[in-house]
Length: 218
Ligand SMILES: NC(=O)c1ccc[n+]([C@@H]2O[C@H](COP(=O)([O-])OP(=O)(O)OC[C@H]3O[C@@H](n4cnc5c(N)ncnc54)[C@H](OP(=O)(O)O)[C@@H]3O)[C@@H](O)[C@H]2O)c1
Image (cartoon, rainbow, N blue to C red):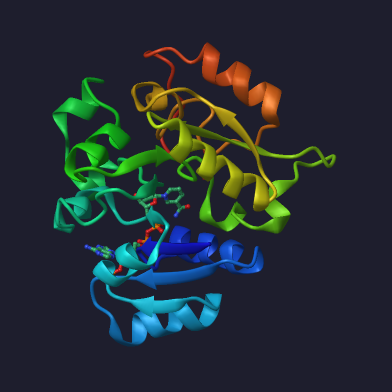
């Protein structure tokens, strides 16, 4: 499969490496091009391109850039594509977004509302980039780590779950994008290594008032 990636930072490179190891073709991109992108491509075995080239290249496209930079992307860039949204909301980086603060929208619904016609699946946001590798698929004791996924388009979500499983992770379907707040930043399961059943239970037990201290997951 061809995987396009918008972004060439920590998450983008981790997914690029896993994609290459699983035998996929991968193209990374960033907004600056040049040496920064060449280094990321060399480190991962991916090709390098512009965001528009990565969008066109990918049968599946990962968007892994700071949330506040999503607005830089042309609205129609990913129309018709299955898009993995790995982004999280960090107010100190992204600026305060009232609709998120007040729980009126999820980060992925915000991303989807900008990317006209894209089939957005939230995934790979609730794991630290340094754990997104073969070793990170196992918990102490050897059980398989599972990751949450959410989306409104069953076939797009199924494609992303297949990729997760190829990478060695289990997957827990948290439902539609409107439920994805359950694994956003500072929710109890956010970036916590869990096996499938505890993750499923943790997602179900999360309420709108369930928060963990800022940064406790790092
Ligand atoms: N790091 C983690 O452990 C982690 C875990 C889960 C989720 N996340 C989330 O995933 C997203 C990416 O995080 P990260 O840690 O990978 O970020 P990062 O290391 O800071 O990398 C961000 C990348 O986005 C690129 N970028 C910025 N604006 C762009 C644009 N308009 N078009 C194309 N590329 C653009 C940057 O390159 P240029 O500036 O050169 O364009 C850079 O390569 C964030 O929303 C973050 O919250 C991060």
